[in-house]
Length: 172
Image 1 (cartoon, rainbow, N blue to C red):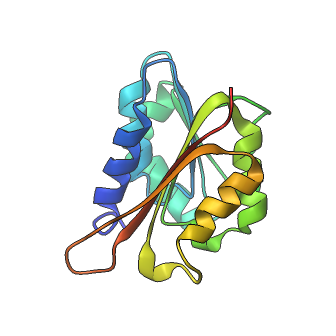
Image 2: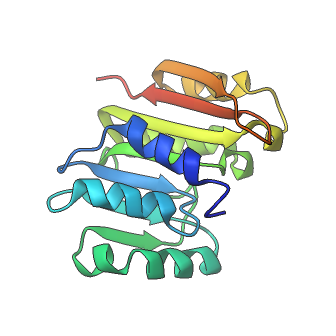
């Protein structure tokens, strides 16, 4: 996961255009590669929350991000896209890398819409070959949840299927 998702983790964090005061939720944070990247951009006044349903992944992420955790800039908890543990409109950015195929998508997009502040940004990427349905269904589900300015692209990758990349905003 660390090696195979590295490029997509970097794309997602770059696309989020994180600032020092941002509050960020990383859904399905896995071993913490994206968490570490995000935390490095929001210190000292921002905050990152990573959620993952796997205790093994949370333990790996905790080890990788120990410094940011000890500074209070990052927390890792049990959760999913459908159940983030975040308050209403408490986050500026939501990031998801290679886990949307595990969601109940209607519930997951609705939850991320709920936790994002007005104008908040959703950044999502996933390997095309793991989706059980056409990539355009992600655009439809995000729009059904209320997201606007939904952009969906496929980025070619060497050696495997394209990466599906989605960005969307909660209306202001």
